[in-house]
Image 1 (cartoon, rainbow, N blue to C red):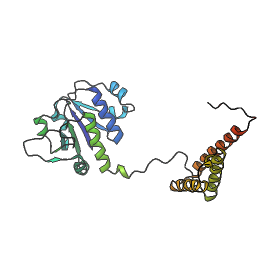
Image 2 (image 1 turned 90 degrees about the vertical axis):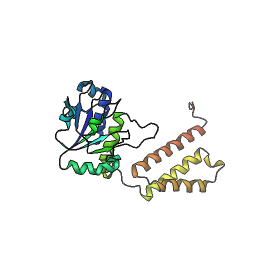
Image 3 (image 1 turned 90 degrees about the horizontal axis):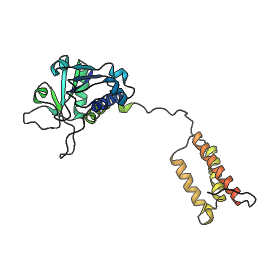
Image 4 (image 1 turned 45 degrees about the vertical axis):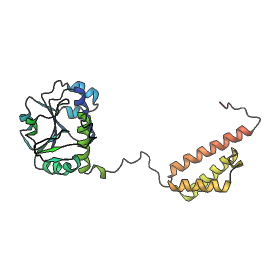
Length: 249
Protein backbone atom coordinates (compact mmCIF):
# COMPACT_ATOMS: atom_id res chain seq x y z
CA UNK A 1 0.00 0.00 0.00
CA UNK A 2 1.31 3.43 -1.00
CA UNK A 3 0.34 6.24 1.39
CA UNK A 4 0.81 9.95 0.67
CA UNK A 5 1.64 11.83 3.87
CA UNK A 6 1.53 15.63 4.02
CA UNK A 7 3.32 17.01 7.06
CA UNK A 8 1.77 20.28 8.25
CA UNK A 9 0.24 21.38 4.91
CA UNK A 10 -0.61 25.08 4.98
CA UNK A 11 -3.00 25.55 2.06
CA UNK A 12 -6.28 23.73 1.52
CA UNK A 13 -6.00 24.29 -2.24
CA UNK A 14 -2.70 22.40 -2.28
CA UNK A 15 -4.34 19.53 -0.43
CA UNK A 16 -7.02 19.49 -3.12
CA UNK A 17 -4.39 19.36 -5.85
CA UNK A 18 -2.76 16.40 -4.12
CA UNK A 19 -6.13 14.65 -3.88
CA UNK A 20 -6.73 15.23 -7.60
CA UNK A 21 -3.30 13.81 -8.49
CA UNK A 22 -3.93 10.75 -6.35
CA UNK A 23 -7.27 10.17 -8.08
CA UNK A 24 -5.66 10.64 -11.49
CA UNK A 25 -3.01 7.99 -10.90
CA UNK A 26 -5.02 5.49 -8.88
CA UNK A 27 -3.77 6.04 -5.32
CA UNK A 28 -6.25 6.11 -2.45
CA UNK A 29 -4.61 6.70 0.91
CA UNK A 30 -3.82 10.20 2.17
CA UNK A 31 -2.71 11.16 5.65
CA UNK A 32 -2.52 14.73 6.89
CA UNK A 33 -0.38 15.73 9.83
CA UNK A 34 -1.51 18.85 11.68
CA UNK A 35 -2.95 20.63 8.64
CA UNK A 36 -3.54 24.34 9.11
CA UNK A 37 -6.96 23.92 7.53
CA UNK A 38 -8.86 20.94 6.18
CA UNK A 39 -12.45 20.69 5.03
CA UNK A 40 -13.35 17.67 2.92
CA UNK A 41 -16.39 19.44 1.46
CA UNK A 42 -14.29 22.37 0.22
CA UNK A 43 -11.58 20.04 -1.09
CA UNK A 44 -14.15 18.15 -3.16
CA UNK A 45 -15.33 21.45 -4.57
CA UNK A 46 -11.84 21.87 -6.04
CA UNK A 47 -10.99 18.23 -6.75
CA UNK A 48 -14.27 17.02 -8.20
CA UNK A 49 -15.47 13.42 -7.98
CA UNK A 50 -13.04 12.47 -5.22
CA UNK A 51 -15.52 11.75 -2.42
CA UNK A 52 -14.42 8.11 -2.22
CA UNK A 53 -10.82 9.14 -1.66
CA UNK A 54 -11.70 11.87 0.82
CA UNK A 55 -13.68 9.34 2.88
CA UNK A 56 -10.39 7.52 3.50
CA UNK A 57 -8.34 10.56 4.55
CA UNK A 58 -6.84 10.30 8.03
CA UNK A 59 -5.73 13.30 10.07
CA UNK A 60 -3.02 13.06 12.74
CA UNK A 61 -1.62 15.49 15.25
CA UNK A 62 1.88 13.98 15.25
CA UNK A 63 4.06 12.75 12.39
CA UNK A 64 5.28 9.73 14.35
CA UNK A 65 1.68 8.51 14.65
CA UNK A 66 1.06 8.92 10.92
CA UNK A 67 4.16 6.85 10.10
CA UNK A 68 3.92 4.28 12.90
CA UNK A 69 2.59 1.38 10.79
CA UNK A 70 4.79 2.05 7.73
CA UNK A 71 7.62 -0.29 6.75
CA UNK A 72 9.30 2.17 4.38
CA UNK A 73 9.33 5.98 4.45
CA UNK A 74 10.60 8.17 1.63
CA UNK A 75 11.01 11.88 2.19
CA UNK A 76 10.82 14.35 -0.68
CA UNK A 77 13.12 17.34 -0.47
CA UNK A 78 14.63 19.89 -2.82
CA UNK A 79 17.41 20.92 -0.45
CA UNK A 80 20.85 19.37 -0.45
CA UNK A 81 21.87 17.88 2.88
CA UNK A 82 25.34 17.97 4.41
CA UNK A 83 24.78 14.62 6.13
CA UNK A 84 25.32 11.66 3.80
CA UNK A 85 21.91 10.19 2.95
CA UNK A 86 20.41 7.66 0.55
CA UNK A 87 19.23 10.10 -2.12
CA UNK A 88 17.38 8.99 -5.26
CA UNK A 89 15.47 10.36 -8.23
CA UNK A 90 11.74 9.55 -8.51
CA UNK A 91 12.13 7.19 -11.47
CA UNK A 92 14.91 5.23 -9.81
CA UNK A 93 12.99 5.06 -6.53
CA UNK A 94 9.68 3.97 -8.06
CA UNK A 95 10.47 0.27 -8.52
CA UNK A 96 11.87 0.00 -4.99
CA UNK A 97 8.78 1.69 -3.56
CA UNK A 98 6.40 -0.66 -5.35
CA UNK A 99 8.40 -3.67 -4.18
CA UNK A 100 8.36 -2.42 -0.60
CA UNK A 101 4.61 -1.84 -0.82
CA UNK A 102 4.15 -5.58 -1.36
CA UNK A 103 5.31 -6.18 2.23
CA UNK A 104 3.58 -3.32 4.03
CA UNK A 105 2.62 0.34 4.04
CA UNK A 106 5.01 2.70 2.22
CA UNK A 107 4.85 6.42 3.03
CA UNK A 108 5.60 9.19 0.57
CA UNK A 109 6.38 12.05 2.93
CA UNK A 110 6.05 15.68 1.80
CA UNK A 111 6.73 18.73 3.95
CA UNK A 112 4.94 22.03 4.40
CA UNK A 113 4.92 24.44 1.50
CA UNK A 114 7.12 27.14 3.00
CA UNK A 115 9.76 25.08 4.80
CA UNK A 116 9.69 21.56 3.44
CA UNK A 117 10.55 18.68 5.76
CA UNK A 118 12.30 19.37 9.04
CA UNK A 119 15.48 17.53 9.96
CA UNK A 120 13.50 15.60 12.56
CA UNK A 121 11.08 14.44 9.86
CA UNK A 122 13.93 13.49 7.54
CA UNK A 123 15.47 11.41 10.32
CA UNK A 124 12.44 9.11 10.08
CA UNK A 125 13.01 8.48 6.35
CA UNK A 126 14.67 5.38 4.90
CA UNK A 127 15.37 7.23 1.64
CA UNK A 128 15.27 10.77 0.31
CA UNK A 129 14.03 11.63 -3.16
CA UNK A 130 14.81 14.84 -5.02
CA UNK A 131 12.91 15.71 -8.18
CA UNK A 132 15.32 17.16 -10.77
CA UNK A 133 14.60 20.82 -11.51
CA UNK A 134 16.46 23.89 -12.73
CA UNK A 135 19.33 24.54 -10.28
CA UNK A 136 18.27 28.13 -9.67
CA UNK A 137 14.59 27.28 -9.00
CA UNK A 138 14.44 23.95 -7.22
CA UNK A 139 11.30 24.32 -5.10
CA UNK A 140 8.20 22.69 -6.59
CA UNK A 141 4.60 23.39 -5.68
CA UNK A 142 3.38 20.67 -3.29
CA UNK A 143 0.70 19.42 -5.66
CA UNK A 144 3.14 19.32 -8.57
CA UNK A 145 5.71 17.37 -6.58
CA UNK A 146 3.12 14.77 -5.59
CA UNK A 147 1.83 14.53 -9.18
CA UNK A 148 5.33 13.92 -10.58
CA UNK A 149 5.99 11.24 -7.98
CA UNK A 150 2.70 9.41 -8.48
CA UNK A 151 3.15 9.57 -12.26
CA UNK A 152 6.51 7.80 -11.95
CA UNK A 153 4.97 5.19 -9.68
CA UNK A 154 2.13 4.65 -12.15
CA UNK A 155 4.62 4.15 -14.97
CA UNK A 156 6.66 1.70 -12.89
CA UNK A 157 3.44 -0.17 -12.17
CA UNK A 158 2.75 -0.68 -15.87
CA UNK A 159 0.41 2.22 -16.64
CA UNK A 160 2.18 2.93 -19.93
CA UNK A 161 1.26 -0.54 -21.21
CA UNK A 162 -2.45 0.03 -20.73
CA UNK A 163 -4.18 0.31 -24.11
CA UNK A 164 -5.84 3.52 -25.18
CA UNK A 165 -9.60 3.66 -24.95
CA UNK A 166 -11.21 2.18 -28.04
CA UNK A 167 -13.13 4.60 -30.28
CA UNK A 168 -16.82 4.83 -29.53
CA UNK A 169 -17.73 3.77 -33.07
CA UNK A 170 -14.97 1.63 -34.53
CA UNK A 171 -15.05 1.07 -38.30
CA UNK A 172 -13.15 -1.36 -40.52
CA UNK A 173 -10.49 -0.07 -42.93
CA UNK A 174 -11.73 1.51 -46.16
CA UNK A 175 -11.60 -0.83 -49.13
CA UNK A 176 -9.84 -0.04 -52.40
CA UNK A 177 -13.23 0.44 -54.06
CA UNK A 178 -14.30 2.97 -51.41
CA UNK A 179 -11.04 4.88 -51.74
CA UNK A 180 -11.36 5.02 -55.53
CA UNK A 181 -14.83 6.50 -55.13
CA UNK A 182 -13.37 9.08 -52.75
CA UNK A 183 -10.60 10.01 -55.19
CA UNK A 184 -13.12 10.37 -58.01
CA UNK A 185 -15.35 12.66 -55.92
CA UNK A 186 -12.38 14.76 -54.78
CA UNK A 187 -11.16 15.16 -58.36
CA UNK A 188 -14.66 16.13 -59.52
CA UNK A 189 -15.01 18.71 -56.72
CA UNK A 190 -11.61 20.23 -57.45
CA UNK A 191 -12.47 20.47 -61.13
CA UNK A 192 -15.75 22.22 -60.37
CA UNK A 193 -13.99 24.92 -58.31
CA UNK A 194 -11.34 25.22 -61.07
CA UNK A 195 -8.52 24.10 -58.81
CA UNK A 196 -6.75 22.52 -61.79
CA UNK A 197 -6.89 25.70 -63.85
CA UNK A 198 -3.24 26.51 -63.15
CA UNK A 199 -2.12 23.17 -61.67
CA UNK A 200 -1.29 19.75 -63.04
CA UNK A 201 -4.35 17.56 -62.42
CA UNK A 202 -2.51 14.24 -62.53
CA UNK A 203 0.19 15.36 -60.12
CA UNK A 204 -2.32 16.87 -57.69
CA UNK A 205 -4.39 13.71 -57.59
CA UNK A 206 -1.29 11.56 -57.13
CA UNK A 207 -0.39 13.68 -54.08
CA UNK A 208 -3.94 13.31 -52.73
CA UNK A 209 -3.57 9.54 -53.04
CA UNK A 210 -0.25 9.63 -51.19
CA UNK A 211 -1.75 11.61 -48.33
CA UNK A 212 -4.78 9.31 -47.99
CA UNK A 213 -2.69 6.14 -48.18
CA UNK A 214 -0.35 7.47 -45.51
CA UNK A 215 -3.13 7.66 -42.89
CA UNK A 216 -4.87 5.13 -43.70
CA UNK A 217 -8.62 5.83 -43.57
CA UNK A 218 -11.38 3.66 -42.14
CA UNK A 219 -14.77 3.33 -43.85
CA UNK A 220 -16.44 6.01 -41.72
CA UNK A 221 -13.69 8.53 -42.46
CA UNK A 222 -13.73 7.76 -46.18
CA UNK A 223 -17.50 8.31 -46.30
CA UNK A 224 -17.19 11.61 -44.47
CA UNK A 225 -14.55 12.92 -46.87
CA UNK A 226 -16.61 11.74 -49.83
CA UNK A 227 -19.63 13.62 -48.49
CA UNK A 228 -17.53 16.77 -48.11
CA UNK A 229 -16.17 16.46 -51.65
CA UNK A 230 -19.64 15.87 -53.09
CA UNK A 231 -21.08 18.92 -51.31
CA UNK A 232 -18.18 21.09 -52.48
CA UNK A 233 -18.83 19.95 -56.04
CA UNK A 234 -22.55 20.67 -55.77
CA UNK A 235 -21.92 24.10 -54.30
CA UNK A 236 -19.48 24.92 -57.11
CA UNK A 237 -22.05 23.87 -59.68
CA UNK A 238 -24.67 26.11 -58.06
CA UNK A 239 -22.24 29.03 -58.10
CA UNK A 240 -21.69 28.52 -61.81
CA UNK A 241 -25.43 28.46 -62.57
CA UNK A 242 -26.58 32.04 -63.31
CA UNK A 243 -30.16 31.07 -62.47
CA UNK A 244 -29.25 30.34 -58.82
CA UNK A 245 -28.70 33.16 -56.31
CA UNK A 246 -26.39 32.30 -53.37
CA UNK A 247 -25.39 34.39 -50.38
CA UNK A 248 -21.58 34.29 -50.64
CA UNK A 249 -20.86 35.92 -47.32
